[in-house]
Structures are given as structure tokens and as C-alpha cells.
Image (tube, rainbow, N blue to C red; front, side):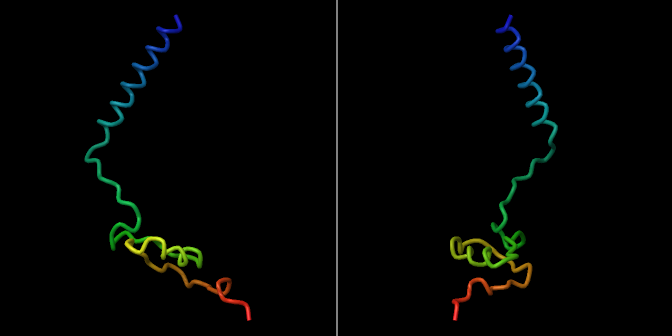
Length: 75
């Protein structure tokens, strides 16, 4: 009985997944932020600005005034 129940659950889930995929018309490829100039990564703080150096091939946009006080050398 357990094998039959497991088999039925697999069939129902497979059917539901297939219906879900076919119900989405005109699937559009998702573009990650920063992949294009029209979809930049928004920089809102000093840590985000600091992390730009790890991927210079992306597109970035400054969204806020960034306070760099925490990144200054102590005097």
C-alpha cells in the first residue's frame, strides 16, 4: 500500500509541475542585477561601494549619499 501511495504522489506532483510550467506564457529570461546598464546594482551604503572592487565588470548606480566616515583612517 505504501508503494502505491508513493507512486500516486509522484504522479500527481509531476502533473502539477508540468501544468505549472505550461501555464506560464512567454517565459522571459531573468537578468541578474548589474548585467546591463538598464539594470544596475544599486549602491546604498559604504560596504556596497567598497565591494565594487570585487566585480568591476558589472554596472553600478549610486542610490544614496554614502557616508564613508567608518572607512576613514583614524587620526
